[in-house]
Length: 405
Image (cartoon, rainbow, N blue to C red):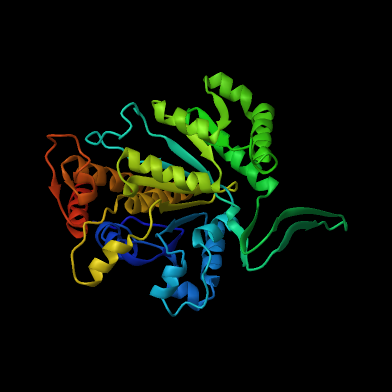
């Protein structure tokens, strides 16, 4: 069969550890046999980021802005333990996701991939909950330091006009740790606009929650901007469609989410969205079963899996062991990127290929062939065959070939 053509490249951001291995397998078994693949490749593996002083991450993000569509593998954000594991590192480099999100700006929409044979841990959830995570600032762009003596830390803003504002953060009587974080009004507003627009497109209610009773100014600005955007721009369309915009404190929202039936979009600040998306993914089945797409105000989209690099499986792989690592979210990152690229370039065959990748993956799971993380979650009596990653991808590839024949 002739390979499906592409006209504009995708930005391909390779990653780390077990997900990097799966990345190669997915390309080899599910993509290259069927697509005349065109990518602009960037190696975001930790050691290459270190060798380029993280310039490769900046270059990849700018390429995504230029080409409009990117697909990203999971990457390591080093901590002290990682610095010991990788003695070649010259610096504890910042999160590549944080760097990319800061450059692209926008919102990360994360939604669980659901299967009829796996029911959520929260029994009353009847429909997926989509997490809309603000993708700029807060602790992901913070600066922090440790001090070892009594003293005072202040926060000072110096305006271009020459005006200054200074606040006393705290006076301490001994060693302490400090963190300064920020967000931009324009980014918060873009976040709100993206959430309202996505809710209208999906015809789903939108919830938003922060902790403005404690963080009265910082979180209060998020609340104010969301309310302003809703009342000035989106309220009429929401009412026309019978949709609800709902704000509440995050602790109240968590309780309401657990008691809900699902089927709505939950907008959250950066860190809150990071944590709650993992909770939602796990409650619906597995962290490996959640899609993530970063949507920028200019329409740029970056597709990735929500989970990490699966370190434990990687060390087994290095010992020569076969691992049963779930590749579904990474497959859906590629399929989402193909569908978006096909839409932008007017290539219906590329869109259909992305859809076929997803259908072949889900049908393989629904047939009972799945990785071990899912076998303990299926309904009682549902017949399953536990396979390793390579066997699972082979099964998906066979179904995909049948669909494309």
